[in-house]
Image (cartoon, rainbow, N blue to C red):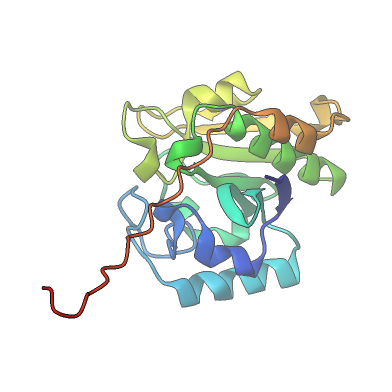
Length: 214
């Protein structure tokens, strides 16, 4: 078993957690209900990825176990995230990078993987000279597996502050100039997480027909 944190690549887009596969909620210019899969178009997602990485650079991190994607975090400058301009708390700062979403495979949740993905994201942004990062939080008690936002409590526990309040989806902010550059080995921390391995699927026993018997 090998666990790694890697930049989000085009090859990963077809292997993301179920809620993310083909979802273009944040990439859509049309106002959509805040739900994962409110708009899905794998071709449009690939085009968005190609545009962002070609013009700006890496726009996400994935946690891998062997070749399986355990979780993903995505981020990009606000100009690449048109859905943000429809959010009820108001649009992010023009100069900010927006963390759009973070999803973790259901059987890998609640083991600390989200914090490592967030740190990998922030480490990347600090290294690229980004000063402000923002994210919309989900304040309501709801199924986070279907939410295109990140839990507000999680963001607050990890150093974000509320920038623009809203009862359901406030905008949070972190000034990256105020944090230290992490030196710990995040991949070693990922290896140490007690994430259970998925049980192998049973292989059906082939039925052998014996001549003369049914």
